[in-house]
Image 1 (cartoon, rainbow, N blue to C red):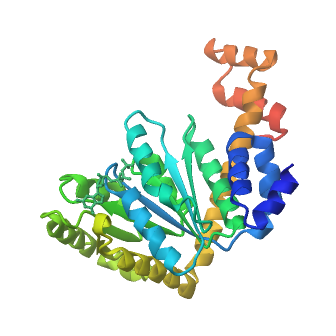
Image 2 (cartoon, rainbow, N blue to C red):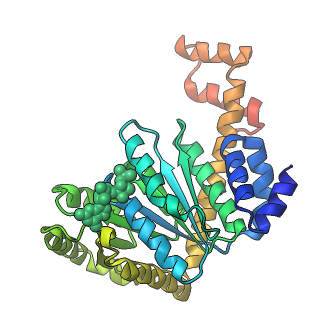
Length: 319
Ligand SMILES: Nc1nc2c(ncn2[C@@H]2O[C@H](COP(=O)(O)OP(=O)(O)OP(=O)(O)O)[C@@H](O)[C@H]2O)c(=O)[nH]1
């Protein structure tokens, strides 16, 4: 069944792509088999992360970006990471409706991924879904995440270019960006540029970037700030151009190689730690180990020594 689906995927069959993504999302063993088989057909897609606070207009903007990229005849994939929260449920429904009009276009593939509990699981499923879309023939894959905590920061482990969207009037938002996100953004967008305080937000961002002049010089790339009005398509082609310029910068400076190596390393680390967690997790249910853990609580053995015993039993390695 999997071989047949992969055959169809490689011929550009959208339904086969959808089935394969469902499989990699839900079935650990099948995910392994699928990725092993399709890996050699991947590596062509350029991955762009789009992140920002809820309501910043990410979906509206993405909808317009898809059109812009389609003008060049490129095949586009979208993976929308959806932290299943009662607060975003409504907005997501909105997203689907907004982007639905692309669903008859064979050159556009849109997929939402749910968190289902573990963030690690989500990161792996997202990486795998990206590979399926890459093998399907996507030239560009957008990964959209709502700007909340770790998911947002993790996008650097997945994306080649990270676009951070902010909007005027969030007040302390600029401070929030300062706190951790500035590090990860390759391009800043001030969306809702039609709002009156948009220029002030733009100015504040410029000031903030000015403080880090040395860093940009070292890096060879200063993140541009682009004003957009997603609703009316304003600034969208500039944004796409900036993304392509960042790509050219990575290609020409050779940094793309470092980036891909970093991503590969992060991915393999996740696979290994997931494997260890699951192996050790299973063993924790054994009687012997159960008793050993009881002994830690009773102060008969310390946790380090117990961990050493468990690692030797499960993984065959001495710590
Ligand atoms: N005034 C104005 N409103 C906009 C603009 N872009 C988007 N909006 C509106 O902002 C609201 C939120 O837009 P979404 O695209 O749903 O935002 P999102 O970031 O995907 O939201 P979440 O799914 O909650 O993360 C919608 O009502 C949009 O119509 C813009 O450029 N100007």
